[in-house]
Length: 305
Image (tube, rainbow, N blue to C red; front, top):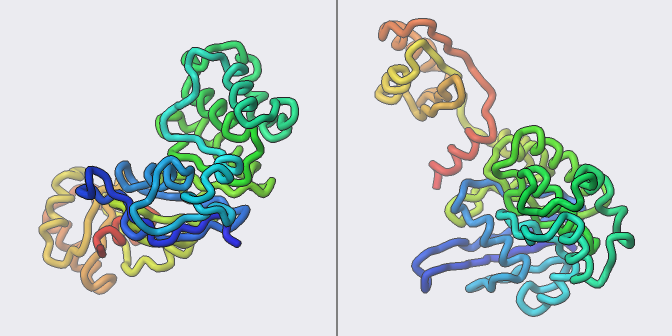
């Protein structure tokens, strides 16, 4: 039995005028670290609110460990830990007061389930009497995760937990998720950061309420259909303009210090393209094949819709 099963979920807002989720279906296996990858407005938060029984679908069904999100909402709330995208703890309570409160809500104690949060809590314990509203982004993140774990959930749902957090804290957080997964906890995490997709067992790419693809990162990249080139020159703005008006260009997007370019006839067009750029007198020109990234795959899938 999958840990999570979503079947043809449709959810709209504003009396049906805004389509948030469009026939979304996927399964998450028990013990899996599953990523929902997409930009703001893709439908990730709506999906989490449906799985945590905070919203009702317009149609379709969803189950968490066999419990229906509509009929069995009390059972689901006992077995799910939820960390919303925005910090939702009591800012005028201290770290320890927040943790004690959430333990009490679930009829347990910190001592009873301390083994679940020990690796995380020891990092914020020296500040246990500090008000939650006075914590840094990384410390708020760790406290929220402790509160989500204190009742020993079977499934952990994390909505963009690393947004706005510094790179070091982001890495520490994902290291913590790896340790939680090793304990057998099923984790579903959403993120707009493509690099975090690499830390997941499988990912779902979601855009405008629709699932574009579900697979391992390696599986998604293996499906990328084009030969890709990384191109740069001294004047990147003029380079982008020249390539986008070039007759044999298929796609061309800015990607860090380079442009990622695909050509209509692939490798066959590469020599002529490089010659074209040289004829346009681009100084310090670099033109080389490059492996696609998950961002490239996402853009390709979006264009295919």
